Amino acid sequence: MASDGPSRDPRSALPAAIAAVAHADDLDASLAAILGVAADEVAPTVAAIFVQVPDRSDLVLAASSGMDEPSIAGLTAGVAEPDHPFAAAARERVGTFDRESVSSTGEPFVGAYLPLSISTGGVEEVIGSIGFAWPAPRALSDAERELLEALAGLAAVAVDRARLASTAAERSEWFERMAHTDPLTGLANERTVSRILELELARAGRQGSEVSLALFDVDDFRATNTDQGPEAGDDVLRRVASVLAESVRLVDTVGRIGGDEFVLVAPGSAGAMVARRVLDGIAALPAVAGRQVSVSAGVARFPSDASDSESLIAAATDALARAKDAGHGSVAETAALPEAPQQA
Image 1 (cartoon, rainbow, N blue to C red):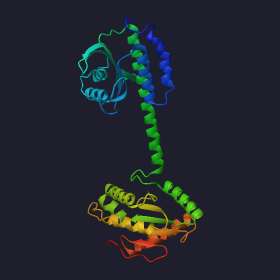
Image 2: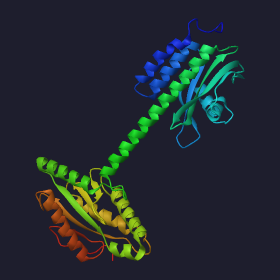
Image 3: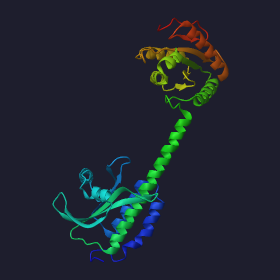
Image 4: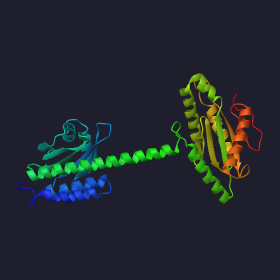
């Protein structure tokens, strides 16, 4: 060993490092444990771990030790250069030891830089790099080099495990979102709307309050699909959904429940007011494939128009039919005659 190295074999710290990473709660704790072992065994002045940004070539600082904020900022800026030792280690997939250099303050130092490599399906992938620095002169022993190589491998495993966990979480979130939303518009789907309607009715029943239900139907949607094609129809649906999402209150729920049918569940008695706001917003939309977009709406209220979800939907459906009879862009309420059309 080098005369300035530790008296015991530094590789003896590996079991503790592996155990620390295995029981760490997150990536930050894992990488901190790895740098902590390096600090105890080979005493670098500074150390850092950079990880690859997925689908990009950027290296992002994930952990460091022995550096203040200005030093971290300077290192991060330097790593953006392709010939920087951290970037070179990741790009060339080769570790370097005893690399002599000079710090920004003019002090000579020795650095060691290693890639973080994993193997997937027999294909090696570099997902970052790890580096250490000591004041010059500093010669690393074979045992110290083996320790640093092992720590690089352990860091690669920790980063890869975190990436897999993140991917699994994102996939789970995606499936959860898909289970509750309409894929075309991003609004709640029929199943979600039905569940929320039942919850709102139950709450209103307990509190003696009201719930408004508004059904919207795109006027002449079939003609748009037939004359202009399904892409134009999808464009109409997305634009209507956008107006719906922007027009409602935070307590309201909007969803798509059919081909060109949308729904609003609005706690309280403001359903008709919100429905008119939606129609005004849709009337202001630009034409799609030369055809002006408009919707008709039917509004019913709990408990004045119906005592349960099924009868409330039926009442709103009846009001919607009367609105469509009155002309494009109309709103009808269960207990009132249809209003004059807002849009021809």
